Each structure stands twice: as C-alpha cells, then as structure tokens.
Amino acid sequence: MPINPDLAGRVFEKTSPYLVGREKVREFARAVFSTSPLNFDVDAARAAGYSDVVAPPTFAVILQQLTLDQLLADPDAGIDFSRVVHGDQRFTQTRPIVAGDELTATLTIASVKTLGGNSMVTSESRIEDAAGAHVVTAISTLVVRGDE
Amino acid sequence: MSVITPADFAALAVGDVVAERQFTLTRDSLVRYAGASGDFNTIHYRDDIARSVGLEGVLAHGMLTMGFAIQPVLEWLGDPALIDDYQVRFTRPVYVDGETGAEVSVSAKIGQLDAEAGTARVDLVVTAAGQTVLGKSQIRIHAPVAALQAP
Image: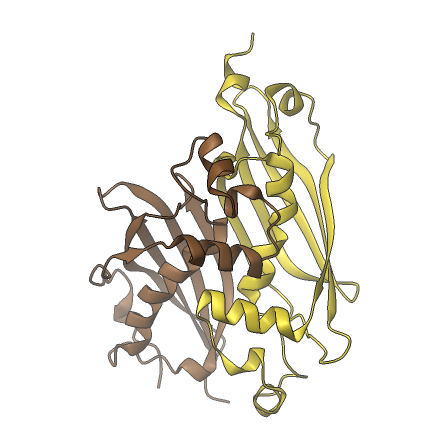
C-alpha cells in the first residue's frame, strides 16, 4: 500500500501535556553517556541559571515519538511500521528542556516524496512549554521501503 | 564545569578540532537507551528478529548514536543553551556484537565560523569499524552573549 500523498501539509492534534521528570532526565542522560553535571545535579543546574536539571539535546525525541505514534496509528496514512527506516533527524531549539517543563507537541507533515520504490515522509514536531512558548522543533525523515 | 568564554570563541578557526571521544557500546547500552527513550524496537536487542529482517544482527538505535555523538561538544561548550540546531543523517548501522560490543569514535571540528555574528558550525565525524555511521552531522552554536559585546 503506497503512502498517501495527501498527507503533506496535514497538521495533527496537539499531544497531551508531558511533564518532564527529574529522574527521567537523569535516566536519559545516563543512556546517552552524558558527563555534564547540568544533567544530574540540581545545584549545578541552578548555579548555571536553570530552574532544574537540564535534558540532553536529543531528549526531545521522546516528545517527537508521541507525535509520530499519531501518524503511524492513522489508517489514512498507509504506513507499514515494519518497513520504516529513520533517514535523518534534526532538532532546532530555542532553549534546552528542563525538568518541570510541561510540554506539548504538534505534528505537521512537511512533505511526502517518492524516490525509486521508497516513500520519504518529512515531519516537523513543534514542542512548546505550558505558556505556549517554543522550546524545540524536531524534524525527522522516515523512509518507508516499497514492496519488494 | 567551565563554560566556553568569548575569548575562546574568538580564537577559533575553521578546521580546529574542539572535542574527541571514544564510546564503547554493549548490549546493556542498547537496553538502557530503549528504556530511557521508550523505543523498544526489537531489532535493538534481539538477534533473531534483526536477522529475520535482513540485518547482520542487533544494531544501535540511530537516536542513541546521535545522542552520545554530541556529548563531547556539550562538554567543550559547557552550556547546552549555546546550541541552536543539531542534525544528522543515518547513513550506516552500528552493529553491536553480543560479546565484543562496538567502538564508536567521535571527532568534532569547526566547519564554519562567523566570528562577527558569534556563530559557528561544528561538524562531527562519527565512525565505527572504520566507517562513517552518521552523515552530515552538524551542530550550529552561538557564542555566549558577552562575545558579541566585545569591542
């Protein structure tokens, strides 16, 4: 089943608020081999001007994943998850995510392209804090392999 | 921890290597990342499933490689707020052997510099088994505000 080309330009519903937990930040930071005290130590983070421990730059993938789940669950999209390969990834940030942030993410499908037998879906997940201010946008291209 | 100073920034030149580090991945690293990120795709911890979809074996999450590849640069910068943008292309899988794991090398150098605007592009070279695993991996950074106020 081919990817629905009409997906391009589609904006999905904003995700439910995600509360960034201090231990989740520490757990994620350990998993990506962080050595920065800002990721682990509340006092160090406060001394550097942050309200709490700071999440590593790729932490936003957790929020992005919540939006991509919306896309993959949509029967209109026609995306077979077993054929999906992550092509590229980008984070454009206004500020780092910190523990205590309550974040929402809004998915927009930027483009759908076909190259050879494969489809490439580029999505943008705009992540905002509780006040509606931009924190980071996660941009991702998923390559969906065609039928062999 | 020390934050890069305006003087450090002004002294940068294109081609300068600003950070380097070697990472050793084991199967434990992949399980830990799966739990932390919520990405439980089985190709990251089950050889039988990885092979059944045509892979050589279990491979690291691309997002794990992207996640640690920026760590040496963060250490050098001191403050993650100086990062504006981080992008990578996933060009080749990093296979993680059950016994020997995988070694991944990261080298970060200045690719572009605008000292007046106080911005730079840091290019990452990320290799495993002698081959590049992340392509076009670039971090855009800005100098601390004080750098722009310097005469």
